[in-house]
Amino acid sequence: MFEKFTFTPKQIEKYFAGALKDFNITKNSGPEIVFTFCYNCLLKLAIAVCAKNNLRVKAKQGHHIALIEKMSEYLGDENIEVMAQEMRSKRNRDLYDGGILITKKEAEMYFEFTGRSIKEVEKYLNFNKLF
Image (cartoon, rainbow, N blue to C red; front, side):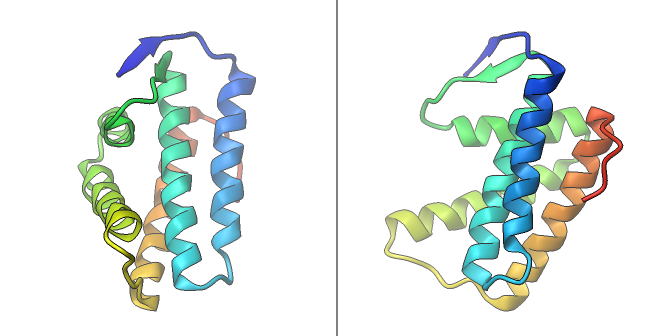
């Protein structure tokens, strides 16, 4: 699922910046947009964490699962895997089962979780940036 690859610090920072961009889109948005962009943000955070560890994911079936598992493993936070896998499952149901409804309460929970994940990844990557 992964291959060894050496990323430059600039490349890793670009992945992290992309995650922040997605997260910022969620601010003052409706629940569906919050959910979608928080999930995208988590995947980009996972790509940045893997890149920091010289791993590049190959686009294969299950690569989102592998990315989330690796981020959770590297950060030593199993809650990331649990929550992100819940989000992935909802995303799949929305995509393949004709849609789901994301409540405002759920969107707020995903927003807070993603914000905490950004802080964890930022600390892990040693960027010292604020969002």
